[in-house]
Amino acid sequence: MATRRFLLLGAVLLSAACSREPEPRTVNVAVAANFATVQAELAQRFTQQTGDTVRASVGSTGQLYAQIKNGAPFDVLLSADAERPKQLEAESLAVKGSRFTYAVGQLALYAPRDSTTAVGPDLLKGTFAHVAIANPKIAPYGAAAIETLRHLGADTTLGGRVVQGENIGQALQFVQSGAADFGFVAYSQVLKEPAKTYWLVPADYHSAIVQDAVLLRPGERNSAARAYLEFLRTPDAQEVVRSFGYAVPPQRQAP
Image 1 (cartoon, one colour):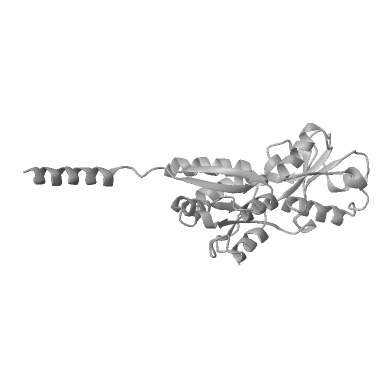
Image 2 (image 1 turned 45 degrees about the horizontal axis):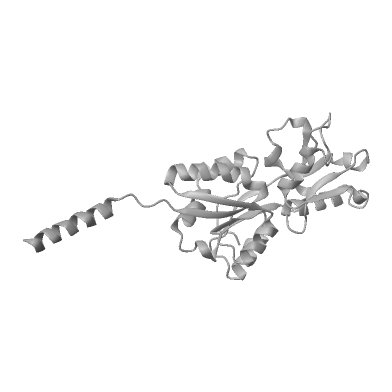
């Protein structure tokens, strides 16, 4: 009789364990500064759908790449370029075959205190003190800003008037605080500002800002990390990305 009771109790416990809701999981995402606001919106929707938590670490792409190389336990990288994810795959720090383009960014020149629309030729007039950019060595939007200045013929005329932030978020802060008159920022950061305060840089003034996502080695066994990358490719997520001023290419594995 005791044996029978023991078996019955075991069956009840096993049934309860099987029927229990799975524990919420956490995805650690390293996200480029230009995409931080979009990432927050996407993470909220993902959590609502799955119950899993997304924890973001924000920085320039170069900074995040260095942290990953030094062993930072990120599961996913949302880069502001295609090169770092590709390098991480080559260095066996990311899972091959997981990389794809989740967004294509746009560069904007922002001047919130200007009474007219900030346009590229204004940089040639010399009637301002400073223009802010992200560090071009570690931030793809900063590199695009340098290419734009060269296109405008202003790269050799600005002298010491260019101030650099560590990432595109800090470049925006320089402009908002008045430390710089203009700033090259991501369109997503200013698209809700009055249209007269920013100028969208034509796409042919700089290399395309192709932003790739990749699954990192610490996330290889994290099913929530894989689910989050799949979520980024859904129509719902893509619509959010577009609403913040990014283009979304047809979803396919990056070359």
